[in-house]
Length: 107
Image 1 (cartoon, rainbow, N blue to C red):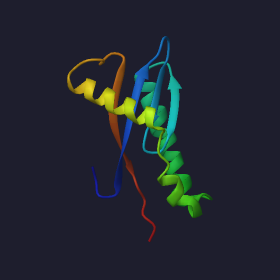
Image 2 (tube, rainbow, N blue to C red):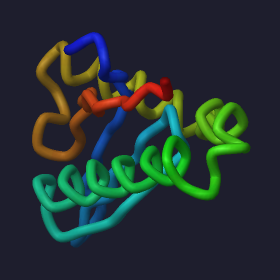
Image 3 (spheres, rainbow, N blue to C red):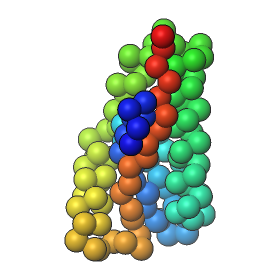
Image 4 (tube, helix red, strand yellow):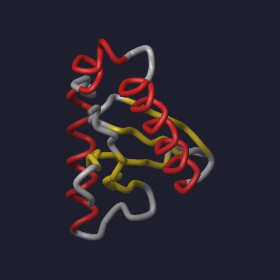
C-alpha cells in the first residue's frame, strides 16, 4: 500500500445464483454474476464514492461520509469469512479481501 492510499475491508459471497460484495468501511454493496464482476463493481463504486466526497459536492460532509460504517451483522460476517478463509474453508462461496484505494489529499 502506498502512503496516499487507504485500505478498505471488503467481502464477497455467493448466494444461490449470484454474488454480492460489501465494503464494510463505507457501507457500500453491489451484486453481480461472478466474484470478479462484484469485486470490479465494488471497486468502481468505492472510487466514485470517494471522488464525490473528496472532490465533489459532498465535500462539506466528508467527515460524516467517511466514517459511515456497516451494520454490526455485516461487519461480523466480514470477520467470520476472513477467519474461515484463513483456515481454508468457504473459498468457493465467500472471500474476504482488502482494496487499496488512492486517496487524494486536499492541499
